[in-house]
Structure formats: structure tokens, C-alpha cells
Amino acid sequence: MAHLPLPPPAMSTTKTFASAADLQVKQVRFDKLSEHAYAYTAEGDPNTGVIIGDDAVMVIDTQATPVMAQDVIRRIREVTDKPIRYLLLSHYHAVRVLGASAYRAEGAEHIIASEDTRALIVERGQFDKDSEIGRFPRLFQDLQSVPEGLTWPTLTFQQKMTLWLGQLEVQILQPGRGHTKGDTVAWLPEEKILFSGDLVEFDATPYAGDAYFKDWPQTLERIAALQPEKLVPGRGAALQTPAQVQAGLAGTRAFISDLYHSVQQGVARGEDLRRVYQGTYARLQPRYGQWVIFNHCMPFDVTRAYDEATQYPDPRIWTAERDLQMWQALEG
Image 1 (tube, rainbow, N blue to C red):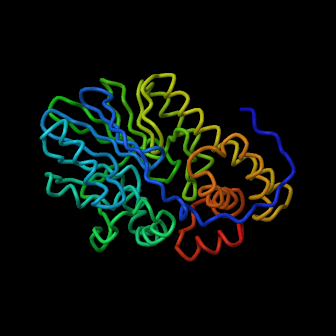
Image 2 (spheres, helix red, strand yellow):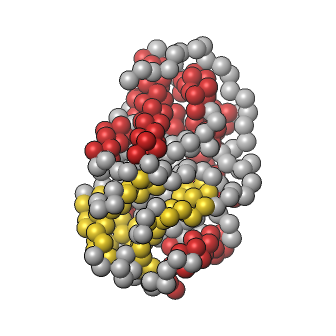
């Protein structure tokens, strides 16, 4: 793969922490992809997928709070009255899972996640919750509606699980490490529709603070091997043609590869994290700077890439305190 040229590092300018200044309400879409599949998207905010089977509904990622989940439920109720029996967590991040309690009144019986995702909730779920609330104030609307504690799966699996919603086959797959070590996708093999979670983004910057940069491109290859014709990414518009799907996969792969390659080069030159960050930001900004949450993600992404390229094969836990310390060190 061709990588971006290497301009001289530029000093970063002070930026508002994470997404604290992002207060603009986004326009929601609820797109029908097939008789069984819908995509709830909002101009780069976290997406939710919906699968409607013969006798029940599955929701993939629940939104950040129960109040926000109610808008998803309202739209589901415009197209079906079947019980929302299954919730699937594509990974453990708070913006994806804390809305789960809203679905209990709609018939939710099972919360499904990979065993790796459950292990991450045990290890770092509360730290992540506290961290993300500080990063994304707008995404945690009516935070008081979130029950105490964390969202816990009731069913876990390793590698693959098949669920039948009547005659509709839903494959729940763990294709490999990428965005996190527990990433999970939902696949409708008959319709060739994939719900990728944050393994794939479209016109939105991949958050990689908990990522495995060396593994992520290979995981995307496994997704591509399924030959999806439609795909609901973690952020961005639903991809509704094979060409759009390929663009989403290629864009995500290019960003991850370009960023890690730049960080590796900086490490090889003996640069410290701040200088590696400045150089990598300067190199990636012309190509990716217009993507949603670029300025938010870059300090976290480069810090994780620097860790992986040096002494931390597994992601370190982000806490609210570590978030601010890192931001001040790189952007202050």
C-alpha cells in the first residue's frame, strides 16, 4: 500500500478537549436496507443497526443513554410491532451500550457479546464509562436516565454464534482484533448485509485508542471476504452498494495503515510521543481532516499506536484523568 508523504512536523494548536465543543444536533436517518435490515444513522454519530426477523427484532448497539435509545425504538415501532428480544454489543464502549435498559419494556431478553468484550467490561468498563462521558457530552443526553452500574451481557460466545429469528439466519461473528479485541459483527448471509460496529467507518475517523493496529487490516480482509453488498458502519452513512462497501473498507484500512506507518517511522527516528503526534497529525490532516471527529480521535489514536510500536502490545486503560493528562501533553 502506498503511504502518505512525510512533510516536516508542524506544531499543533490548542484544541478543545475531545468532542466537548461538538454541540450541534445531528440529522437522523432510518434507512431500510432490506425487508429485514435497517440502519439508524446521524451524520457521523454512533450508529444503531436493526434486524427484523419473523418473530423478533435484534438491535445492534443501543445508543449512549436510554433516552437516546427511545428515538431508535420509536422508529422501529413505525415499521414493526414485534418484540425487541435481542441486543447485540459490537464492543464495550459506553456510547454503544448504556442505552440498553430502554429495551426491557420492549421485550429484550438477551444481551449478546463476545467473551472478550465481557472481559473488557470487567477490566475497564467503569473507567471507560467515566472517560467517555467527559469526551462526548452531547452524546450522553439525559445522563440521569442511565441506571447505576454497567451494561452486562447475558449471552457470550467465542468466534461465531448463529441465531435464528424464525427462518432468518443471523450470524454473529468475531472476525478478529481491530477497534478493540472483542469486536463483533452481525451478518445476514442470505441478504449479504453486514453490521460492522466500529471496525468500519465511513467519512468518520476511526477511534483507535483501544485498538490493535497490526491486526486491524487483516480483520478488515476477513470482513471483505464475506463479500457484503450492504454494510452499516459504526459511524457514517449506511453503505448500500458493493462499491460503497468497498470504499468504506478501503478508507478505514488506509487510515489505520497510514497512521501506524507514520508512528512507526517516528519511533524509528527516536522521536518522543509529542513529536510523533505532531508529525502524524500534519501528514494525515490533508487527507482525513474533514472526517467526523478527526481532531478528537487523533491524540488518542497516535498515543495508542505509539504504545503498540514501543512497549505495550495491549491497550492501556483510559481513565478520565489519563484522558486530560494526555490531551494537555499533546495539545496543551
